[in-house]
Length: 177
View (cartoon, rainbow, N blue to C red):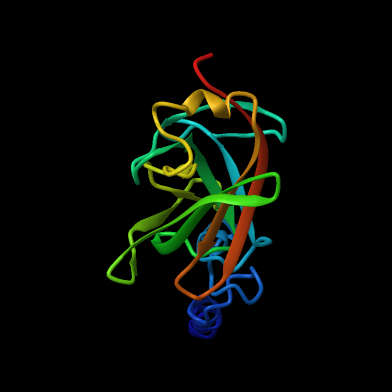
């Protein structure tokens, strides 16, 4: 009886839970740590936990960007990056292949954005992300010049390990519609 208990107890304490060499972590936990899944940034829309990836060619409106000027507010989901940790986020806009604007969310060289793990293992950026346009070229006075413009919204994220993932969506800007 004692030998049987030792055999069962020893197996239970061995750290081998039958899940392979995962350290006992579930796939969702491993995804959150950036250990599982291809490096990917998905650009979409959503409020709270809701998320809908933008389709290329989608029509999007402009808002006042938290970093200044005007931009397209986006929701972001990632795979392959470390979640529940700070992340360096750079947003860029290109029109006809030429950069219109770029902004990196950092202060004193430190990231000001955080990736938050989601129930499905992907990570999400917090709120306040807008992919902006050049405030020198587009002001309140000529913002309608962007109406109908096709632009690429680009979000680049670098996690704490230095892993880099980039997402890009081509959209059509709608002003006042």
